[in-house]
Picture 1: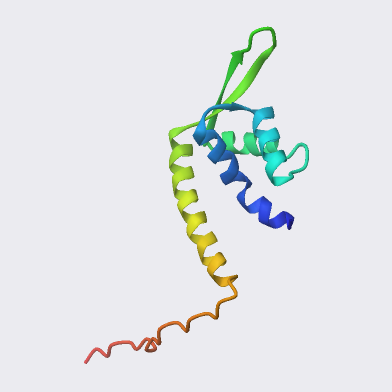
Picture 2: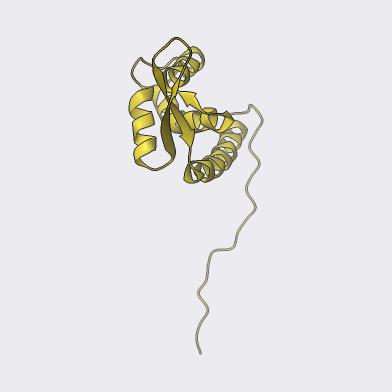
Amino acid sequence: MNAQYKKGVLDLCVLSLLHQGDRYGYEVSEYLANRIDIADGTVYPLLRKLKGDGLVSTYLSEESGGPPRKYYALTQLGRDTYQTDRADYLAFAQAVAELLTDEPAEDPPTQQPFKEKSHE
């Protein structure tokens, strides 16, 4: 798959996973790698960027028998950004899907050229 396609939506994919619930970095990385085929080391810089942008926060949680794990959670700004970006992406994807169909495109409605009003 074209790397630019993936690069453009990875932030949204991570926000979507965190919208479903808090996750630790390796869990996010593995989930995405198994579905989108991303390179190792892609997710952690992205999580740091999202944290720096105020979209996610982190906390440590100790698992039984293991070292503490750093979990990522959406902030209110992250939840708001996810909802907005999700709606924008879905509208964009729908428009692209319509363009990529084998059906002939409808001609757009004819519009009259803009004419400035005269101030007499």
